[in-house]
Image (cartoon, rainbow, N blue to C red; front, side, top):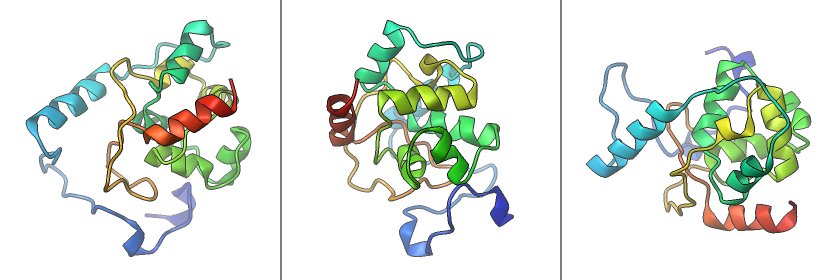
Length: 165
């Protein structure tokens, strides 16, 4: 992998909580229920159209914690958005976007709107109706490639919702 394609600095191997599997390996979701949830989120992911100013329903989805870190990662990767320019475009300081992708920090409403504008998607395209905050003991410090993170930590969602509307 070329380093210029990375969105963040290479971290020591000890920072990563998982390793990349071989092509063709079955996904290890831990349980049939988790695998079904992962499959549902993957099948339901769709970009409904280009960016438009968000409405009240989209704000409510954000407030309810329905953002999906995995969707953010996928859209950033697909659009080849990387580096500190992403953080700047989203009105954040590095490494905020990397922490969003890991579910360790939640973007404020204004940052979420800026992210949707950068990605040219609607805010609702960054959400899933079944997304819910969930604490993970083994959540990686930063995004792990090929690791689907479907939720934010509950404490960071509460902090984001209470800090700005």
